[in-house]
Image 1: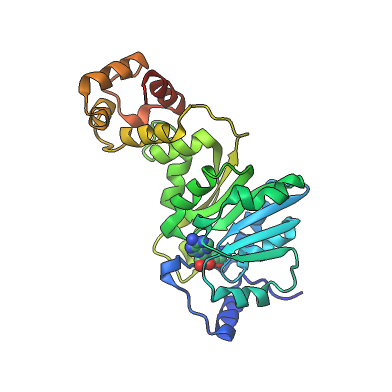
Image 2: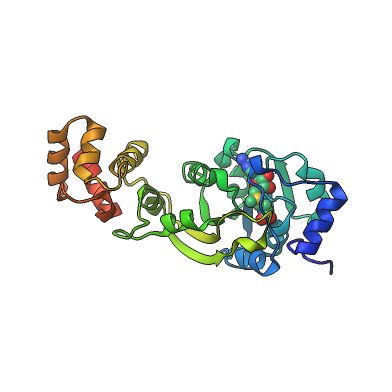
Length: 284
Ligand code: SAM
């Protein structure tokens, strides 16, 4: 069996063979530790048949392991120079399909329709480009596609925010909005030394298990905007932030009191249910 792509020697060999240099503008930090890519692939909840969508395969380090746990893999890569490399490194895996696309422009629901109709369970996995971690995740959350789980590497600091519980220092609008959609858990922490090139910060892999899609609030965009507004200035009270958002302090106080929220509280002490309660008292 040939050597795993996710080793430092194989990564160098592939890049030299193809004269490839990583690009900062695409957030390229390649994984060079086989045990980590294996663990990411193994942590994806199993299903039969399983389709895994990968965002940004790079030279195929994680893709190779995804091919071992999935019936089919669709990998979306923005960098055209990586396409001939992937055709070479993944030639032994006919179940992998690489699509040259900007993932943010992909209409997931439409592209996945044939797989949905064939009864595939769909999971997303990636070592995300850090410069667009949040937009990529929201693109999935807002796609309306029936994604079962999302297992992704990101900067540890951002991962902590996604996983944070109410009344902890990392709890913010991201925590509330992602918890509205999914149960989130930490899979593992990853030191910066296992990437080429080495980023400035450590990373972590987290997993979102999406709930059966159910719209809890009638206008989700308005709900998300409300949550974000309450965290605008973290050190200020929820009354202060909400007053600025509504441009009316008395209205803000009334809504908060009706929702059973002390106006002197900070947003970080409000659970998802409390935000839903507040939204329902308002006419947004
Ligand atoms: N999966 C590889 C690994 O773990 O070694 C590469 C991960 S690297 C952090 C991020 C990858 O995402 C790169 O291959 C990059 O070119 C790709 N990428 C960046 N922006 C993208 C976008 N908008 N759509 C699709 N791929 C993107």
